[in-house]
Image (cartoon, rainbow, N blue to C red; front, top):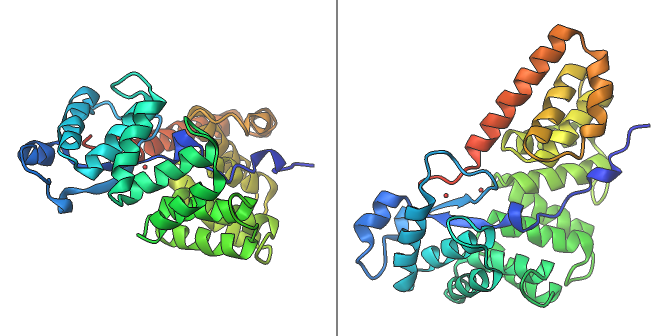
Length: 296
């Protein structure tokens, strides 16, 4: 019997969850000498493991450093992310935390959420789920959808707060309604399992589809699983192969065990089409999550 037990990846680790509050390089250049670059130039994006080919990370770092020296919180938050990932600089948890905390102290929502991840996961800091919960709450109260997802996960797993699946559902739903891919994935996972909500494979399929379209590899695998088993949708081995293969191409091997069996059921033409579709899906997902102008 097929099982999804190995795919309960409702949490977002540092590489998947850190947000970058990106300022287009041209606007940063125009405002580099001002005390406070214009707030309206800010665009919330995430720093994905894959960086677009047209991004000059060295230039991005220089612009962020210029803004950070002037105490501009979004630039500080961005600089923290670059040091956390080692993008354009040597990876340095201490420096990442330093810049993230400076931005968080100014109330920057993205930095508050990132600092929460550091405390939740014990990344460069003593693990403190209760403090992480408070930071996620502060960021979520500002409308930060990634923090809503992490707040939901805290309730989901009882991290820093009493476990409460109804509250987890509420926060995942708010994040999903805001278009957060991990929130969509996590809510879909609860619907698939019937945890905190009435089990509904059709709703799970819809949510996984939304998250997969944004490049969430866990959702890609689960979407493939639903196509493979015909749960919540029609059975479609070619689509199942394409979505699971796309996740594998994106660096997530958790569904690889299904690929051989699916490939054996496909004709050579179907396998070729599914493989090409997987490459197209993976390329589209990467393009949607790359750093943009410098930049989830």
